[in-house]
Length: 50
Image (cartoon, helix red, strand yellow):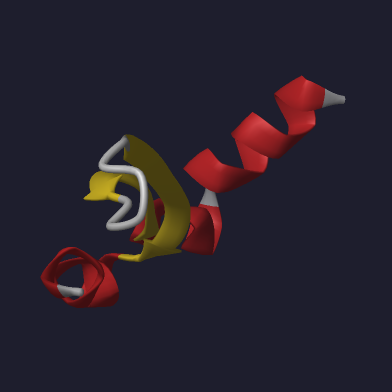
């Protein structure tokens, strides 16, 4: 089943999406967390500006 999901992301409209990973610092503890999202290529800059 996992192969089908990967295959659909590589064909058709799935090529216009990217997986973005951003490191975010938690104010309360001072630790860093990684935020991962699959977003449209047009909104990548907005994801990293937040």
